Image (tube, rainbow, N blue to C red; front, side, top):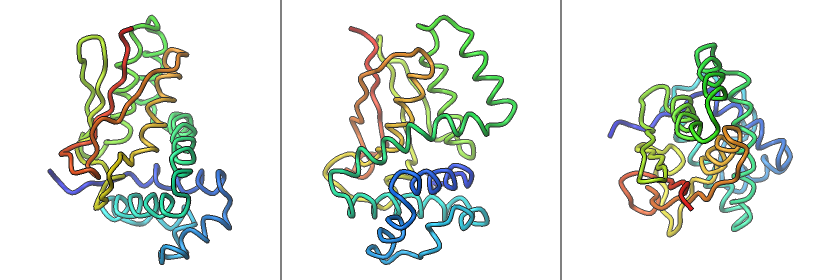
Length: 201
């Protein structure tokens, strides 16, 4: 598996939405407590970094948030993931927007997998490390590199932002809430992060 990378535009949006969610002063406090550079509180800091270093920062910053908030971090990071989805669509390339328009033109029941494939395309533009699969009636999103879990070790899944993105992406697609479970996570020692989306009743 190649070294995880993470796109700069998504990282800058993540940091911006983190400040909106918990406040710039609290972001600064999180960084200080974790011994991380205070520059990380500013989205513009990440524009010039290469995508491998951004992946490291993305993982490390989320770990600092989990340490600072404990169990409360899950809700915060999932909300940020949900808000990220619309922001990513708004600022997407013409090709992504055209694909989104095509998806919204499909019958609702046929939109889920193409919507997740669109999310995978946005998140793994550099290396195609995220794929979507059909499992009987259900869907499986597989993140082979997972910048979130990079160099992390935990006894529970940690990919809360990705979870929020998946949830909001599906709601955008068909207007329904879906049962989503991160059933494998690289932070727990798995080879890849896997999200199961239950479609069948």
